[in-house]
Length: 82
Image 1: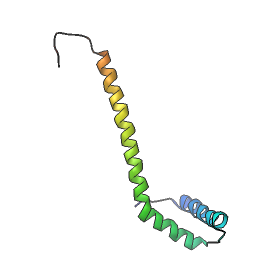
Image 2 (image 1 turned 90 degrees about the vertical axis):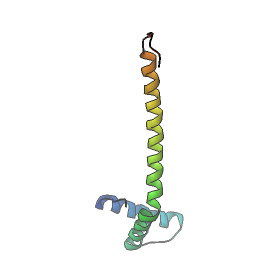
Image 3 (image 1 turned 180 degrees about the vertical axis):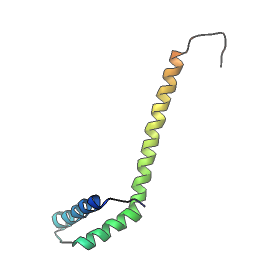
Image 4 (image 1 turned 30 degrees about the vertical axis):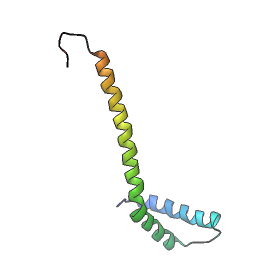
């Protein structure tokens, strides 16, 4: 499970409260907002986390491919072939 610091939890809770107030024209208390945050952290958070890992892996693979190509370009011709 994703863990947030106390400061992060407070910021995210305020953001949830602000969203409810501005977008839904409803007030939500601090505890219900924290419970909602916990729900999304536990149930939805892993999907975002995994997507982030997938995106990072794609970037890393592209960089590694670029490095491999650069190494082949540096190779000097010899009688030995792979």
